[in-house]
Length: 308
Ligand SMILES: Cc1ncc(COP(=O)(O)O)c(C=O)c1O
Image 1: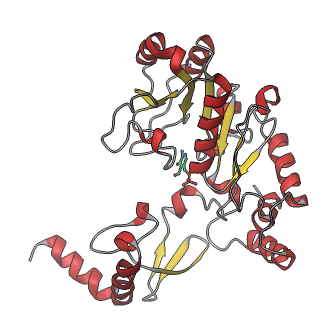
Image 2: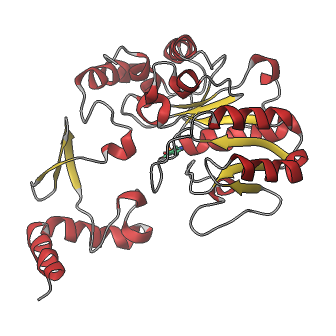
Image 3: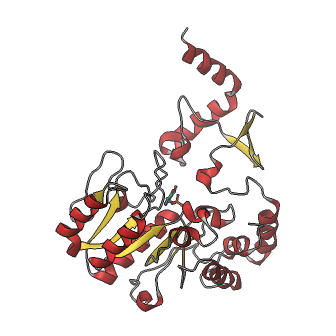
């Protein structure tokens, strides 16, 4: 028996209830899993509950959670102030179509905290914020394409999957360049700048391998975008944590649009935002916002003080 099969045998022996549930899941969900990022062979454990840094599987085994739902659970699981805020909000209803006091207060809190934000639009996920940011940039500039970095993950909007999963540029939609390669970006901009609505950048590349920006790189990207009258979209879904004012404050940037997400949801899904300066806010294209973008049950815990 090889070492790996011994490990697998021990794993299967320790996790029979997960095996059974994942088999059932495969009959009703493609691949037996919706959170594909946490799938691993032969099958992932099924989680029963989480508390602080721990999660327990359905077989009663306890694990340290090193993933924390893609770094969105900055306070760990079942954080008492978040739970209390959700419990306090629920009796007033879970979601309605319209603004709430909590949503207004939360937008105010964000704009006070982040100098780069003038106004906020709430979305259900980072992916949706990315899609709306690109849609707004295209609408504002009248240009069809975006430029993004190879290997950079901005969610599941197809145009932002250029440079991922073995894909290169997407003709007529997206160009790619290498992170930290300012000459490469300049080459793309000098040839296609008139087609490019925005450069989308995560300030520290995290997906796959972590790559910090070389000194001055992000400011040069912003200057290049401006030179070609394209917008700069800063994806701060993860890197907001670099400073109280986010990575724009840390790196001295003035992005046109900022995407936020992850831990801002107070360890709850459904609170994400995209921002744009007042001057062109009226240019956000018409279209319906999604059903849960005004949900008081998410805005409330997010606006509540959480000790961070
Ligand atoms: C940098 C970055 N942008 C965007 C997203 C997409 O966010 P969501 O999973 O909420 O759609 C992620 C998610 O991992 C991310 O890491």
